[in-house]
Image (cartoon, rainbow, N blue to C red; front, top):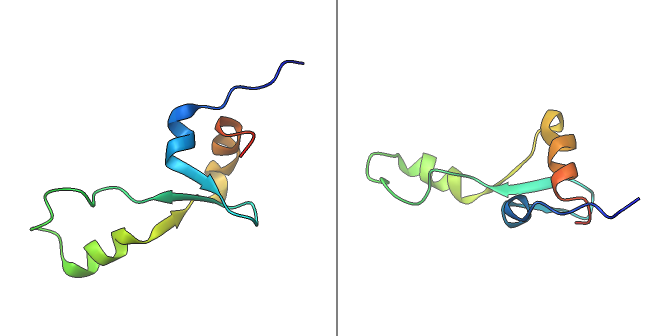
Length: 65
């Protein structure tokens, strides 16, 4: 069986932790920040963890990570 190709777009957006969870950077934190509250902007700085319902799809996109 040939090797699977890594989806390069997904490889730039997601990373896998040592425990196997998939982490991503949250969106909506780059511009039009004046109308967003300080709390919302602070929460957007933190990374998010992919929900288990989407975990299988993301792991297929980045098989060797």
